[in-house]
Amino acid sequence: LLWPGGPGDPAFGRIHAEKGAREVMNIARACDSRLVLAGIIQDQAYFDRFVAPQIDNDRVVYLGSVGPAERSRLLGKARALLHPIHFDEPFGLSVIESMACGPPAVAFGRGAMPEIIENGRSGFLVTDENDAIEAVARIADIDRAACRGRIEEHFTLYRMLDDYVNVYETILELSHRK
Image (cartoon, rainbow, N blue to C red; front, top):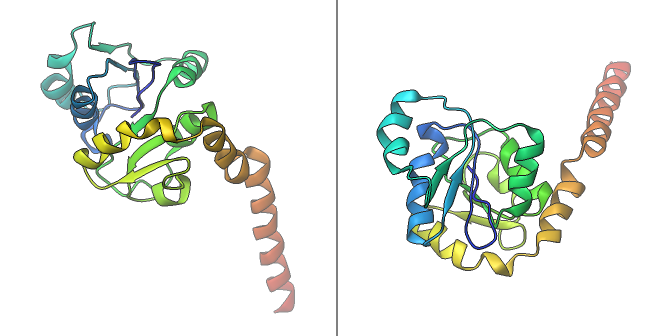
C-alpha cells in the first residue's frame, strides 16, 4: 500500500484486507492527506464494503491497476509508502519498489519488513495506525537518497545474483567435502 504525492496524492499494490487498504485510508484521513489508490482488486467484497464508499475522486481517488511506467511516476511523487500489513509478508516487493524510487516506507513491523526497512533511516516500523500517523508526521526527517541507497545495497538484481552465486558455491563446496 502506498502513499504518493508532494503535498498529498497517494497509491498502492493489491487491494485486500491483509494488505491494509482500510488502514491506509484511515491514516491518510488522520494526516489530512489526499489519497490516490492504484492496484488490482484482489477481494471485491472487501473493496465494495470498505474502500469504494470512501472514493470521492477528490480526497480519495482510485486509478485501478497501473503499469510499470505509471507506477514509477506515482512512486516518484510519493511522500511515503504506507504498508499496514496484517500478515507476516515474506518479502514486500511494493516496499522495495517504492524505496527504489525514493519514498520512505511506513510499515507494520511484520514479516520481512524489519529486513527491508532500516527504522528511522529508510522509513519507520510501526505497530498500529496511531504509530503510523506519528511516523508520517516525521517522514520529512528521512532522506530519500538513503531509501534508494538501502535498496541498492541490499536488493538490486546484481546484489541478489551475487548472493545466489555465493549460496550455490557454498552448496557445491559442502557437497564436494562429502
